[in-house]
Image (cartoon, helix red, strand yellow):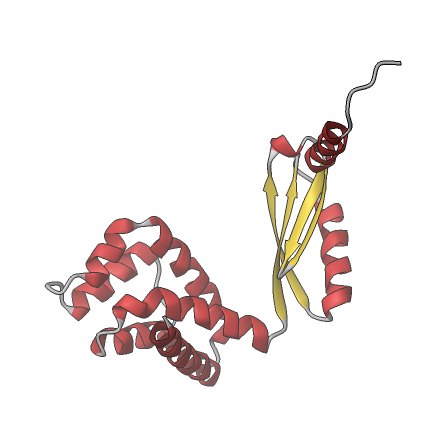
Length: 185
């Protein structure tokens, strides 16, 4: 809802300002991205964070343990603030809002290149440079392998999707052939 978005946005802005002032904005961004993954995968982490009977220090300790290494001063201070104000239910949205804000401030786009087989760094680099020339910013390219594509690739960035996979071409061909009546000559 709008209230959640407003809270997340305000806290994310505060984290961005705080981490920039502390000189650890990039580290905080990397840590927040890692925490988003942990948060998504670990149900018990969410259960502890949302529990009304677990104290703030214990919640922070569980978060530190899940993280596996010391958090930046900015991120730990931020999490303490969120816990103190009883806003832990919004933490996931705050993290997402922060990563979005960080990428906009630094003109960073995230893109995904999906191929049927692993591709070498040279090819991925060419795709990345082509995307950067269009966005005039940095493109961080994630790669994924999905054999069901058969060949070719799928590229996704923001609202751009380029599906140059063999599977998509075959699907299109099937659709075109399926629309015409069968004629025997």
